[in-house]
Image (cartoon, rainbow, N blue to C red):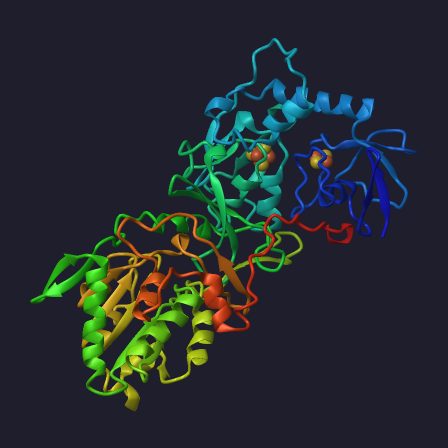
Length: 531
Ligand code: SF4
Ligand code: FES
């Protein structure tokens, strides 16, 4: 393993790693704008230039491989003079509109201006004015804030492979633009906003909603498909304002789909169910959550009293594995022969696969299966033993053990008001419906219990590849809504609140060893050979 010395610190590097990435891995920060470990290296911004002993001129640390024994200076007189010059040039035409810029607080230009820049501008002419552009359904481009790092352009070439963004003009007239009639609307488009180191590319969805320093991050998993993209829910005072990617080398690397990015809207959907309900003489009547649960258990016990195998539970592929396990146990505590059924699994025709525009290498996949945990529920049902059926078998009703069903518990929780048309009528008899949104499924229920959504509870999901990943509660459920796990513990007569880790321990392997990944771990270096 080569070792280099940077500003007097000895740093261990990987073979053929770049100096900048080796420093970042070692927790030593060098300034950079155009460099991103997931993209090619143009070495165009020049802020990362360092002095390397034995080389007469400054070299870009992002593009210079390490070599054992190299001595690097990022704080020498020459390197500091370069940093100041780059900052001064970048700020010549950059508007000083930080107070109204969405990027303030997470802007590299702002941070480096403080760390590496001059305190005063010597530029006395008028700043160049460049237009604001609508470059996509979700994205604005404030051209005069752009520092031409080309990260966004490289992303649309090298990751989404859609090439909507390009550099128009040359010299001080250079601008990022889209081709006429070809907006940046690909299904990964939001990543260009994350990549922009300044506030030039802005997400219309987040624009002017919050100052970023007020936001807290909670690690979570995408609820929008079975890919299991790692994300951060960013929230303030009980409201989720945006979703950002969380690096995971094995799953989504640095990127997320736009479906994932905007999935948080379901949390505050206007159709959100907040009141429990039971039908009194056929009419839905609002009741307290406790009363609804008591009624549900009373009726289910009465049905189970007629003989075993009368009840079912439909476990939604939106449920956490721990919740599915608890509900399975809860329904079996009432009817030991209750049938467990995996709920409908919506799916697009095929995966969306993205390729590098030039090399054609596969870069990202959005899975066709539009729920996060069908695999997890398929794992939990056999763990619980006893009778089970698929949703299709249930709809057909041909299996002998499905003919005696008299009632049961149905969990929805899908992100949209979508439910398959056959679902409300698929289950006969007395129905307890637990859901997050008001749908025709809830209307068909005899008792309706509002459910917490994924951002409001802890748990784990298994993705299409068998990777079981935990997620954490970012915000509290709406007033009056109990977490699903707490409801199932009440049904089981257990005291105390639901705690995902305790349930996972009880479930045994592979759940017992599921742990939150070190989401703050630095992204590994991209090796020279991969570029
Ligand atoms: S818009 Fe942002 S990401 Fe794109 S080149 Fe300009 S500064 Fe870089
Ligand atoms: S980060 Fe090295 S030149 Fe831009």
